[in-house]
Length: 313
Image 1: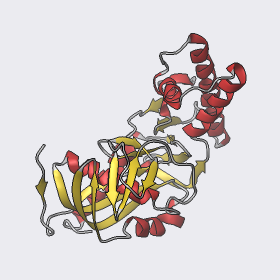
Image 2 (image 1 turned 45 degrees about the horizontal axis):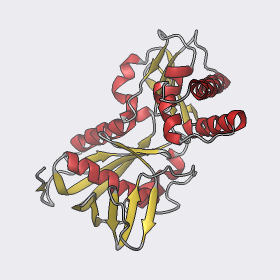
Image 3 (image 1 turned 120 degrees about the vertical axis):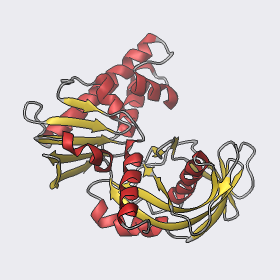
Image 4 (image 1 turned 90 degrees about the vertical axis):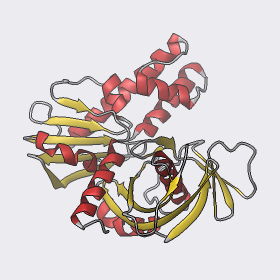
């Protein structure tokens, strides 16, 4: 693959990044949020990022839930990795970049400015990822509401009363969209994502069989409904996932979801729990299982803003 450079006066490259607790998503990629730092170059380096004299292995594990993503440098390092992935997709190694990111619905107003400052802590950076050197000048950052950003191009389909449910690894975001317009007073964020489902599955397997099952196996069952394991383990994981999916529907009903009076739009990495294990009317529930949908939405909104501003931030 050949790489080309861009001049410092070029129109910024817009890169949408969905900073999840379990996975980082861009328009074209998804990788785990694990960050392991080293002072010396590690032996295994397939996902090695080198920045500011330190070495970071990306994606070995997930980050723990935190109510403030800027409390350490991990999400900044993950942002650099995400930028590298998207620049490689565009055959670039040097670019002016406008970041398009987001926060859970009820966090945006309180954390928008601080998260933007966090992402733009450096005007320019030099780093390498997966053996390729990158130079990035940051032209700006836009912060959008998580979940809702993914459906802004579909609002004409949200006629009547609709509930949007974005299920991530750490949180579940709920928003009402009535006749294509969001209802700010009816936005909710719950700590009820797929990670909590994973914990419930682990507990069940340990209690029922006294066995610990690799998270990759559990994730395969949650995402696809199947895994190459003994039937008794598969049945136990499915049963636990079904209980958790029922719990999600109960949480939605706590926020006045009524299948007869409104439609439900489910998205995010946890949408697989609804698709594979919940009982619902397919005519009244839409499941968008594109895990990159929110990152694509951020990118689309930022591109629109650039066009309105004549190419500037």
